[in-house]
Amino acid sequence: MTGRAEHEERRRQIAEALLRIADTQGLQNASMRAVAAEAGVSLRLVQYYFETKQGLLLDALARLGAQLQGRMETWIAEAGSPPTPRGTVTAVLSCILPTDPESRRITRTYAAYYALVLTDPEVLATHGAGPPRVLEGFLAKQLRAAQEAGEIDAAKDPAIAAAGLLAMVNGLGSGVLAGQRSGEAALAVLHRHLDELFAAR
Image 1 (cartoon, rainbow, N blue to C red):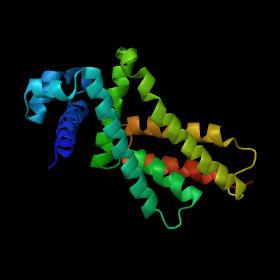
Image 2: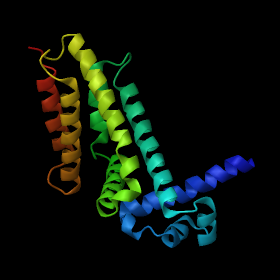
Image 3: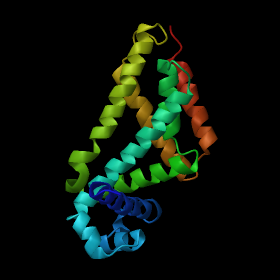
């Protein structure tokens, strides 16, 4: 393994240790010392690869985003080829819902980051909003394409519809984690809303 590859592997090991703590205990328990213990390395090594706690938090958040992106790409590919706007929107929103171990882990970990933003807004406020905006824009683009194909009412605003769908999925996901409804029930709600949205007038 080259020096650069070893460096990256060590950073990945440490960042994923933080993500595991965030998932199971919350970020309030993810001290540098706790991360070192979880990663099986010394505190000094964690401080060598990540000089600050904020740097570690942001690196781990980027890795979490990459994991979600990979999951989305897999679900989109499995939705059919070539991908359709409706298939893409359905795949993206469905894979976000916490219906299996991987999506539950991702959702819980993002929730830990949201909680951190609420208690320490300066840490992540400038970094946490970017990916959701990108995702919302991507969904709006898909909805606009469906609208141009006559699959969605021309009077609908794709940007507002995308924002509403994401907000609904986030709320449904919280309900699933809290035991309010099952993952299957949450998916049924999502599909019902998509059926209504894609019913061209």
